[in-house]
Image 1 (spheres, rainbow, N blue to C red):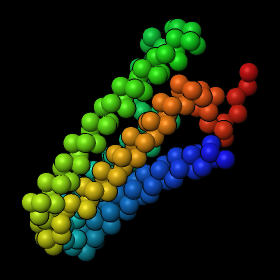
Image 2: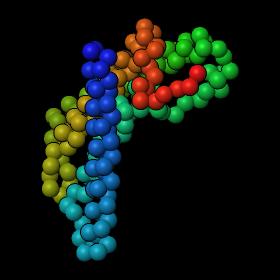
Image 3: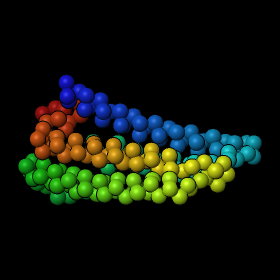
Image 4: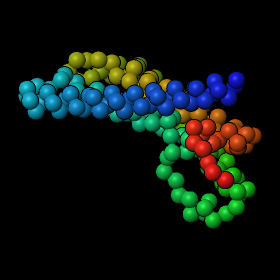
Length: 169
């Protein structure tokens, strides 16, 4: 039961990240369409697009962190045995956990400063801190997923394989 609920949590994070990809694509499409057909610019479209892209990046980090879908260099990993591959995976995941945790801490400070300084968008004077807060939530999700990945790599490496993918051995 616990495995199924954790996998649902992981899938939810990935769907949220995918949703932000769709929102950013829709924002860009509508902005370009209106500008090129009606010669009309949506107020704050640049600021909103920029802030949405920031949100997308942090939720993308969350989505790729658990599955290990980020860019890797496997020169050494591919040339060692399974025991050393697992050790490399655990070490790399611990480093990633540390880096993203520090990043999450500093991004929270950015949310706080943006809120306290009442930073607004240019045209409509919308507060920008909610965008930073949603990005920070994505970073928190990344820390949680990396922690789950670390736990599973150390104590339950059999749970690291995607159950939807069948391997032939």
